Length: 203
Length: 253
Image (cartoon, rainbow over the protein chains, first blue to last red):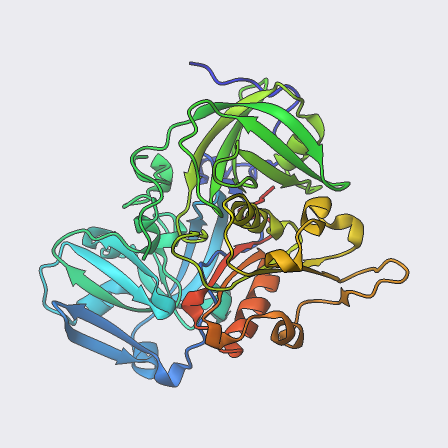
């Protein structure tokens, strides 16, 4: 069935020339960096901050802020895509690869559940956070990551919708099964591939 | 965590515009007929999809403005640099149709059976829309949960749902407090200026009553209000927020 046409409705937002192939369906490019969060912004001082990898209730490995910052890090330039339909091209991050962190832990997990200050969680298949596809980011555009954007550190998984790039991240729980996180419990997609428009459950 | 709000696949449906109401010079409420609407909860949003004559499609999310049990309605603010909102607020006519799916979101909702604690609603500009749905739901269902709406708006003519909000009465358990940030009419004795910690200390329920707060508005507004409420002693889990940046959702362009 063809959709009803809205007479007089037409495109006003032009995708930057030559970059059409970088914008997933249903998205538009913004220069802003909008913020979406379910609650107040937590403010965890870096001296109290840790990043932990947990498995079966045990903490396998934990890094302090200084230890995390001492790990090899990368300057990452990526496009990001929010489920609320904005995309932002060529964002620059300073980040530690999840590969670097997982290399220090023995496991055979198939999934991870990221956990955060404020109680937020999100689920990801392990193959999506390894192989140079995911990071713990602490710098944005050359500055410390601001609290409202997830500072001191957030997950960065740019090939999935941006709710998977959990703000205020404090660790990963290694799991042998896929378990819905916060927004996934409220009807958002378990995986969230922007190129397949996997916004909600069943998409 | 509350139960899942969305079950199974959300399918696109055809919505027909049944009524258009101008709320302010730039804000319009659109009442919709959606034959297979499964119902919604107070505070949820929905997606609409417009298809132009040339086949160009755009999707946006909007907060649902009507109470559970009422026909679906959205309230849209025209953003001059927007793509969808100028069409919805200027060109759309009664009887027009477009695609819609929802409801979406299960966190920023008020559940009248579960949430019986005093209710604080804090709105910035068009952030009042989902909070209006909560107040209407409370009213429709005869809830006695005490509620306060603190509504920050530039000028009095910018107040959305003005007559409706003025109809709420203190002796029926609802207080509506406007704060006018840019300009006040002559003789205005109400509050002025941006919502700040002192204003919230005055208006918010004591933390000891375990109040539940819903805060909706632009990012900077929500950041400031949520932080102030936490400083006043509200646990972060009792402060639910919905933010929109210049291009975010709900009430996006």
